[in-house]
Image (cartoon, rainbow, N blue to C red; front, top):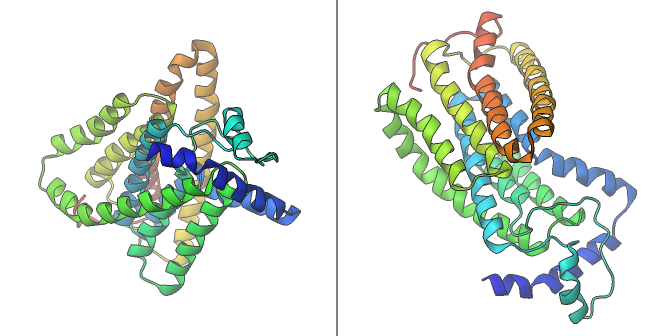
Length: 320
């Protein structure tokens, strides 16, 4: 498989050169925006809106589905270690294939190229939403978003087409398995003690991160820990309801996003300062802690704030 991927590089590079030849100023502005919509901060917004304003259960499942697929993507990248299209190490391969022209990527990425995390994440997130929101117009929107985010990676020159195709295939298999297993796992967790649920919420992401320590896995697993603890505590102490008038939900979303984005930005600045003063070896630890705080804030603090300020009612029925 690894040799096959290396053999595809000249073909993929030529495809990227053809796409680059079709660039224009409008698309140069559009596709960076689309690719950012498929980034971590973009998904923080989507998870939050679904969890706070649409459906708590779907919001929880969506967040965890994305966070764990992000780690899977990192493991696959680090296994194959295929360079990005603009990596100087590809010079020999390209020259041997008779490709003399070179790409001018709009962005630069340093992580391995195969497979596309943006594409894999988009398929999981929008596929999960499309599965639960059974409206034709929304499923068409989900399909368009998956395609656009995947293509944006080619347009920016940061991925080969085989990376995007691989991201779609792995994302599809992962999503199918997640949707098949999620009801069973939820049912099993509902029968367990609170102590065991809290232990799993802490230990599962922590162990996964320690198996592959680094900043790339620290972000999703820190968030998973914070969200897991926050979701359980929310069920114990708050139990907010997503129902309400459209105006109330919009206000809830606006207040929540302002607080979360402000927290995300301020914590990034704060922990970034720690990185500079204590060295790069602590960066992954600080990122894990930072995202755990953000996850806990979105999972418990904001629902608590919504209830306290009258933006949401309590719902004392149901399971965690």
